[in-house]
Length: 151
Figure 1 (cartoon, rainbow, N blue to C red):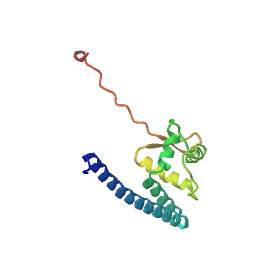
Figure 2: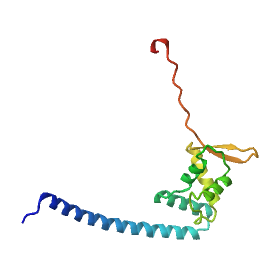
Figure 3: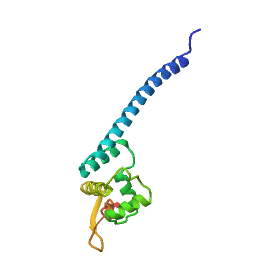
Figure 4: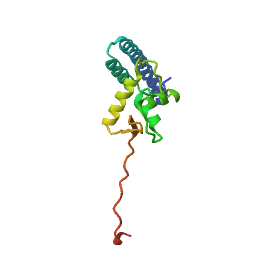
């Protein structure tokens, strides 16, 4: 008995899904192996800046919430905060784990510098004269007033 077009199509799709699942699992295994290797090498890296740079890049690639997202979240309510206060809020609100970082402050400073360069945060001084940061809010464009003929 001949298979109906629907049955043939579903059989073909199941075969393709099985192939895609195999490729996906192999890729997932490679991602895990490379991630673990990079983390292990970063932990023995003597230069803290290099170590933190690689851990930051690893977070960016993995799609996990990293420093940028955590900083955005703690600054999100239009607060101005010092880097130390940002770190404390990240820990307090559990925005991300800092356990992989022997010096998370270096990563926070690096991330804030990048965010400042891109215009995402603004650097100011608090009342003690310490560097503080706040999210840059987009400026609203004002429309020109309507002239009498447009009213």
